[in-house]
Length: 481
Image (cartoon, rainbow, N blue to C red; front, side, top):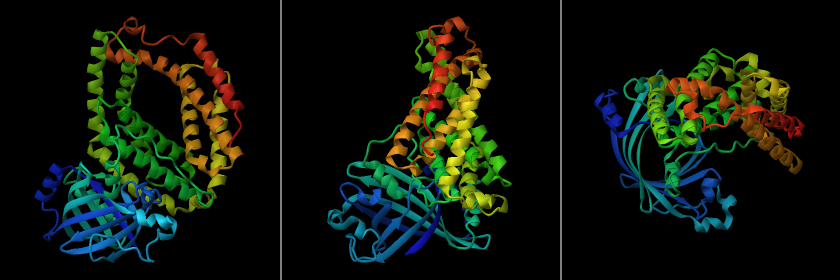
């Protein structure tokens, strides 16, 4: 078994041509044509267990590779088992890690998709580290479906992993690069299903044996992956992708807030502020998506669409900017190798059992929402908005840590607690939509009477419903206690 430490970067085919035109390395690249066949059972049992199995042919030689590792965002650290094989069929011997798990299902393993690439390889020295740089261009094929592939892989052969990021920044100065979240196997499995228009957050599964540090890395990687998967899907015609990208950023910012005492290092404040900027850059587009979805007369709808198109252009400009690309790379590096992982100040929290950390964090956010929402119907708009933000953080924290409390009683309480919290969030969200509407109308140069029918006034009824939802939340039993 060999460990593999790899940074994956995505680029467009045009940018790959521009990259090569820059002649980025002093040496000539080695050139290979590769064909890889990936295998699984009819129910994709290998993928479900976190394994991939392939046979790759290059220059007449065939190598069978098994990799183990869950979803990642940019940085892939995986266990790997390799052996030569005589043909395109895998060999099932005692060295394979999944044999006992699959049992008789091993007999059902068959080809599921193929990957064909032209590969260019350079061996580069960066800051005393040796890095294999690979540019792959080709396609993934599953039955009659095809998907193009263009990516750079930086695999650490020797030295400090920080050199991977130093090299990635150097290459990113030449052409736009983004951290990759889909390895070749994941691209193939996606071809087996309908292409998504937007992706919701994957479930975060933690276990009681984890430390607070281990759990944070799982949580943060899930949030970053959620964002990076939705970002390429953004367009004015796909508001759900924008919504999910914003949810991902809120989840990540909430994770930073939950763990802030453990994370404070020389980079923390900068990364937190940059995430706030990135989330804010998409705010106008989301507000106009919500307004457009409420319906309007033809003339008004046209004015909203003009403003919405402009807002999406501004959002896409920000998301495609060097600043945003650098932020994503900085986050991948910081999550894996940041100072916070070794700082003495956070050592006790890092080592804390995650269940203890989770219970304390959930108590803290619940108290904030409970206290902040007292006499909710009498609060001003800004104070209610703060309660809403705290409620969102609590909802994300519940989602992050819910798997740790897995008895039947705890899971019943979890569902009831989350249901009550979501009802309160919906009520507060409606009130917030009404509160921000005047500012939105002003930006659109619309008079309030022009949209009078689009939002019913909240009045006392809306405030009463929100206050009742807060009371129901307070009465919901804590699933973590």
